[in-house]
Length: 342
Ligand SMILES: NC(=O)c1ccc[n+]([C@@H]2O[C@H](COP(=O)([O-])OP(=O)(O)OC[C@H]3O[C@@H](n4cnc5c(N)ncnc54)[C@H](OP(=O)(O)O)[C@@H]3O)[C@@H](O)[C@H]2O)c1
Image (cartoon, rainbow, N blue to C red; front, side):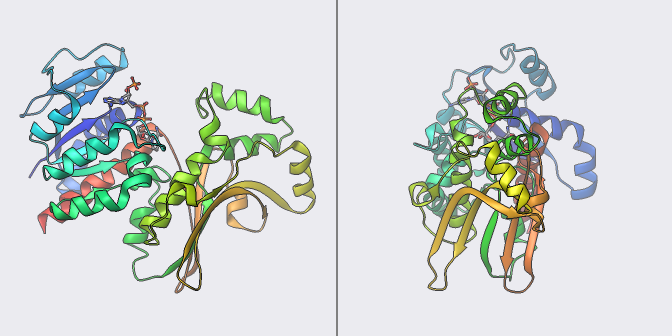
């Protein structure tokens, strides 16, 4: 059966998943028996559209590329009404992340789950602030709340722990969860000062005009909270996670670390203590060059899972990007489709 999708937020990731659905349509059908059509799209910039029989995705992508508003199947419904009334069975929540309030994304997720629609999201807000509540609502309504894209984009982290690593007890997860700061530390190692590197990171689109979320560690802190609550079954609030950014790291510190055969990394960590409590932290650490995380350079992300049966398992991959994060959305949608066939 064709999956029917509603895409809420037609920005980088929203367009990314739609491009994937168009370009890999035949492959996905042949290899996984998977097919999907987008029936609803909601976006501040381009407008809200709905067609129960499927929207003209190619035309909408062209319009978005040219910064033009949608012209076909336009509806006046607000997002929540559209989510509730449309005939989608999966809602992709892809609006902006707000780690303080969760923004409208939480209402979008609730509207979808309460009308028995699965939710797939890369938005850290609902996952970091309301995971338990939304997962409970999903269960009550017999649907799924899937969040692979919230941590390290499409590099499989959440699904790794639920699938291939199932059966292993994970006692610690430690790694590089923010590509912008890892890029900055990598460039500083070449001798470029913090301010100059930050400006380049902004020009390249890695860092926002207000870089606080990245350089102060807040983005990584949201991801640590998600890992603690989803993988370790904790119930941490973002404020429970100690957090320090990279703003105080100087070229001197970097040179000193080099002499000690180490390298500064902004490390996010979740650990299950012997008494069962789970603690999370984010902060700069000198990582010995012999550790796999030390070799992860540029905007790449990586996580080491400490497990009872396999020892350490390290996963390295992209933490952001249009297709990379779109892929995370795709994997969750395929998983839902497989589960529905059972
Ligand atoms: N890009 C990545 O590589 C990446 C990786 C991992 C996770 N994420 C997360 O995935 C989500 C989407 O990211 P993105 O890069 O696609 O963001 P984006 O490019 O800024 O796109 C978001 C789109 O949603 C629109 N929007 C915001 N609030 C809305 C609302 N209430 N109703 C309708 N439309 C709304 C935005 O319009 P305005 O521009 O007018 O606000 C924008 O067009 C974010 O939560 C982000 O943190 C992104």
